[in-house]
Length: 72
Image (cartoon, rainbow, N blue to C red; front, side, top):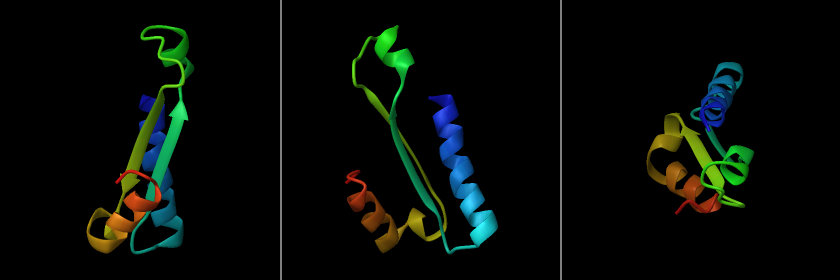
């Protein structure tokens, strides 16, 4: 999960650095074998991380992104 969190932030940072948009948004949903094979043994448990910058942090763009991704 920590790697997924860092990766999510790195993707939005790379988009901003190379494309210079008004904002960037990234959502990653994945299953982790560490959760399904050991510890809690929650088969099919998915972790979702998101990173929002610029215009995606507020207003219409945020609402639209969260609606499209099923987070709202």
